[in-house]
Amino acid sequence: MATQSIEEFNGLILFRRDYREKDLLVKIITDRFGKKMFLIRGGKKPKNRLAPAILPFTYGTYIGDIRDGLSFIRTAKDTQHFWNISQDIGLNAYASYILGLVDKAFSDGELLGEWYPKVTKALQLIDEGFDAQIITQIMQVQLLRVFGVQPGLESCVVCQRTDRPFDYSEAYGGLLCDIHWHLDPNRFHASQRAIYFLRLFSAVDLYKINSIKMKTTTKNELKQMIDTIYDDTVGIYLKSKKFLDDMANWPTNILKTPPEDSSKT
Image (cartoon, rainbow, N blue to C red; front, side, top):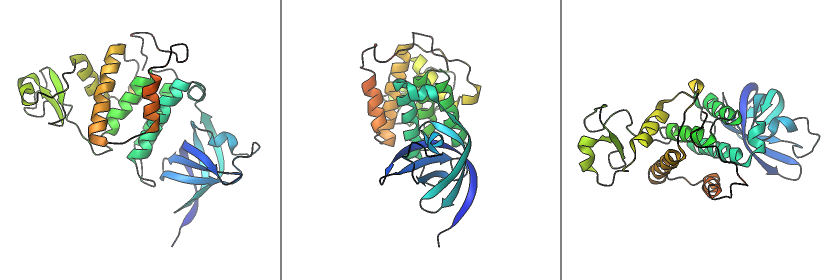
């Protein structure tokens, strides 16, 4: 038997798409009901009173008719919009990819727990000018456990030592210290700086970040490592990820690139 109730909740717009001639379907990440799809009747009309509250990259408090299937938004209050993200194609791409990962990581209706405020905080940091690539990499690493992948990044997975140089081994599902590198000739052969940030990103609290400075070469190396882990163990494909990868080859006059070693996160 279908259930429904009028509820107030906090939400972040995940995406929206056209539905019929004048309506919209809007998917919202909520703090109480997980991801929910909402039908906005007349949502495509310019004068719809909900129009500002259902723009992409908007979050706030919503009151809706929560149902087992399609739900409905009645009103919204205290909504805020990530304007810098919406106006910058590069920031937009990173934020869209983060939201796409979350959409894949959680089933509809599954409670997000700590991840609702964490996703909102990640977008807030990007909107405020923190390095979007670094924030995205942090989210990628921390979302691995949600996808069921829990790489051992605290110590060597063989001897549990923490005081040796490390490398990452897919075969062993985590770090190998230099004493055990011989066990996996196909380990990443990563720099110690990249390994340091991989370990840091797995545990860093987004609410306590002040700044992390990273050379572009290190960010690119870390990107290759994380992409490989995702390709080989998570196995998801997102159009937003391909867009990010293509964006790296754009002319600099189209996409602004942050200066070397000035990554603010």
